[in-house]
Structures are given as C-alpha cells and as structure tokens.
Length: 213
Image (spheres, rainbow, N blue to C red):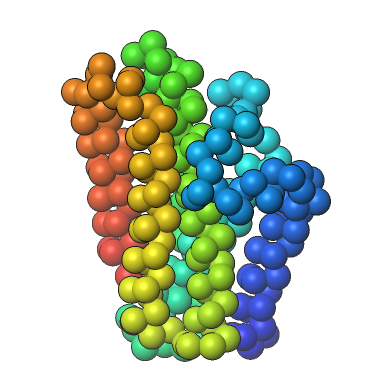
C-alpha cells in the first residue's frame, strides 16, 4: 500500500464516521455544523445523564481523534522532511489521545462531584467536547488540503492552527458566557480549575509528543 493509499484509507474512515453521524441524527448534524454560531446547540442536544455517551458524540470523538492523529503525523513528517506516512505514528498518537481525553473527563467530573457542582461541570465538559469535535472536523478538511493540494508545508500548519485556535476560542467564549454567573461566584476555583485541568494536562501531553518526536 502506497503512502497516498494510506491517506485515502484514513480519510475514508473519517468520512464514514461523519456519514454515520448524519444518518443517525440528521437534524443534530446540521446543528453541529453551525456550532460556532449557535450556543443553543449544547442546551438542545445535551446528554440525558452525566455519564452517558451518545452514539453521535462517540462517532464525532473518534473522528476527532483520527483527524488530530493524522495532523500530528503530517506535522512530524514536515519536521523530519519525510514524505512517507507511518501508521505506527497514527496508532501512537491515537492511543495517547484515547487515554488522555477520557481520563481527563473522568477527573473533571470527579472534581465537579467533590465540589458539589457536578451538573455544571458535566455541562461544561460536554460543551467543551463539542468545540473539540468541531475542531476535528476542521482538521479533517485541512488534512485533505495538505495531502491533495498544498503538501505538508509549515505555513499550512500555521494557518490550520491559527484558524483552529479561533474555533476553540469561540467555543471558550460561548462556554464562559453560559457559566459566567457560576464563575463570578467561584472565580478562585475557576482559576484553579484552568491551571489543573486545562494548562497542566496540555503541558504533559506536549512533553509526551515532544519526547517521542
């Protein structure tokens, strides 16, 4: 199997995951595509319970993992000026992310339960994951542009990351606005939460990938 065939297979899997989302809940999928413009999505399509993961969200999560893993592999190939894709890199990236995000979610819900704000933390985590899923859709499109059109050039990665950060920032603003009253009452806990569950895990994740690369 050639390198292009391997990319084609990865993109096909991502496309199938998105098609399944469309088939399972077509209206919700349409609302999801407008996620950055409508904060109401997270209220309309919220989970029935905190610890239940719906099929729609699970498919989007796997697509997100695959898109991020592929993007990281493309970035690694640019750093090393290697054109061939290594599926072992995709597997490694995906495995780390599959451990990282569920573990982080469990810890966040556990902290919410300890602080007696479990429902608010659950809603916050759900809204944050929706932003990440939308980010995964963006990376899926960028990955195809890199492979089929522009090639793995460093400026493409910068453009992808800048626009991706804008998407995540819009999601953060929407989330902050929704929970502004809770944050205002417990702003010290909010700062502690950001440092413990957002910044520190990202630093650890970055060090893991950096050491491997």
